[in-house]
Amino acid sequence: MGMALIEGIAVLGRIDHAKAGLSGLGRPENFLARQVERWRSQFESYRQFEGWPGGADLPGLREVGQWLEDRRPLQFEPSIIHGDYHLGNVMFRYDAPELAAIVDWELVTIGDPLVDLGWVLATWPDPSGPVLGTVGVTPWSGFPSAGELVEHYALHSGRDVSGIAWYKVLACYKLGIVNEGTYARACAGQASVETGKYLHQFAIGLFERAGRWIGEA
Image 1 (cartoon, rainbow, N blue to C red):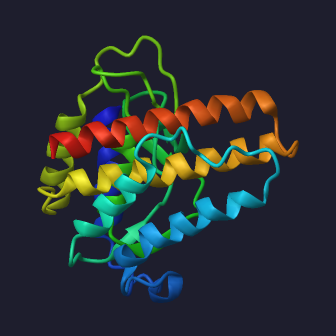
Image 2: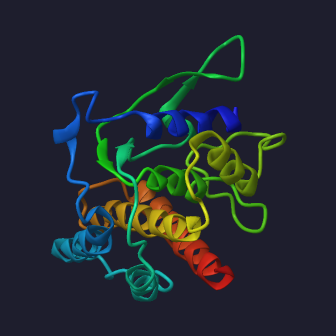
């Protein structure tokens, strides 16, 4: 199932989006250059929510953003990006460990398809730390490691994955900021307090994970 998940985005990234009539779906020009500032601005917008402590306990928020800016890949081959690709947004066949469908396409665009691989890795349970997976599968036995997922993607996509650390950290940065938004709204009474606190802890874990990956890189 884990390998089939990866094959889904490998196939997606091989589609010629221009021939498929999807050239106007997104703006691949400067796609990666826009990422950090876009999500930094999103984070700053949360200051409108009264009672939100401002993300002061998110470890390395500014440092992670600066690391991403300093090491941004300079070029990529644009293709279709799902935008929120993980175990919870695919369906598997009943009779085989193969994908039946990819669902939830509201964030689809044209850009660097390695962003989808980074998103999978950021939400993949890590045996060295807390389980941060978007979907909790119990027991987590028999699933491939993150390294095996990267190797499988390289094999099936033909893309260079030597710089995958950047995409993993970007995914943690983005998802951490998205989760912190729910917490900010909860602080202002506009979302469930319980959910907000849970996602705040999730955001902290994502930034801790990003820091570990930066150290390893």
